[in-house]
Length: 315
Image 1 (cartoon, helix red, strand yellow):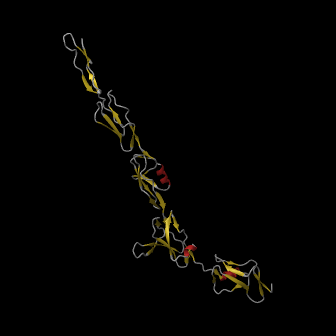
Image 2 (cartoon, one colour):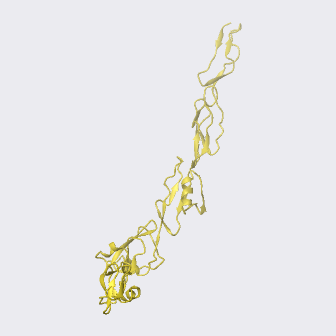
């Protein structure tokens, strides 16, 4: 009437009877049971990812990973337990996106963002490489491409499109470019030529009969001034040259002066800022009015005191 109890080690399950009894015939009832390792069965794979599994029995592990452009949400490992079930829940693969704000901003500033040959805008999947293109009237400063990384961050910020300057010299101005040769000769630059900020080989000079408009530039020892492009504008700013003034015309003086009023001038053009004493031409006339001096102004006009005139007699 003795009983024998059977059990399996952890991770194994009993197949057969757990008890055998010693009968009156001196034999144990039934058959010996056996212990089989616990099997959790095959796991299903996950969308946009990979399942790596080396076994399905107790202690086996299953590893999950996602395809490029996706990130794993949940645990990457599941383990076959002694109860015959896999631990936890299967994870899922979620798309990785990089924000599209910077791409939109670049496009709004006149540039183009392309993937392959297609213009795009807005957020992009991880692994996407975008190229930045500036208009022909601008220079691209910075990286011309950026990659959406697995962290959801772009590898590079968008570049800047720096506008070029256009050579359009006004009257009396000439733009020249220094040649790369040792002789350093200067060649005229054709009007309409686009110049980048990085180009430091240009100068501007004034042709005969003209001088630099800015007085501060006239007192240099050079006949030309270095020219640079900054944010689409020339430095120094245009216009560069202005016609050299011959001064005030003596003929103009007689046209605006009261009858009979003359000055003692030896040339037909009077230098600016010059002052002359005026008097009346011919005997018997007297100069009256506020003051007796006239001047040639900076704008080549004559300044004659009001009420100045010549009258007959002693005044």
